[in-house]
Amino acid sequence: GQNVNKVNTKVEIRMDVMAATWIPQEVRERLYANNSNRINKDGVLTLTSQEYRTQGQNKKAAMDKLRSMVLDAWPRPKIRKQRTGISKAAKERNKEFKRKRSEVKNNRKRVDW
Image 1 (cartoon, rainbow, N blue to C red):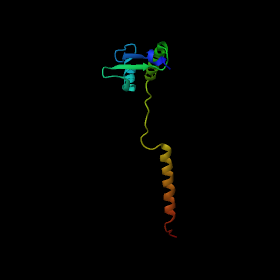
Image 2: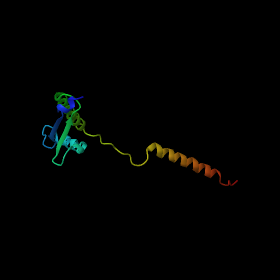
Image 3: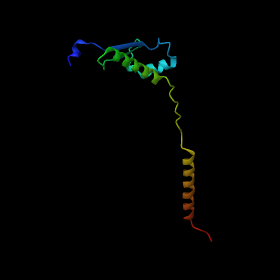
Image 4: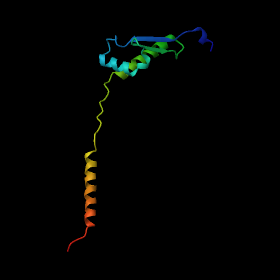
């Protein structure tokens, strides 16, 4: 409606990620890496919210965004082990197949009486 032209309720939050000592260093580094598109070259994270008609609701929404970003960066990422080579079961199957194939081929040979 017409309220759009006369009321400015947009909220912008700026936070220097690396200077936020209330967040552990490794979490700050993950936060920096995960949200690098929102962080400028000075290391300042910028969040905006203008989805609601009141500034109070927009402040709450922006703080919720920031809270969720910090909570997403908080847990350590799982270190995933990548298998190299084939599994023991696959090795066993291959060996069994090879043994059977060898037996089939040996049965084709001429037999001495």
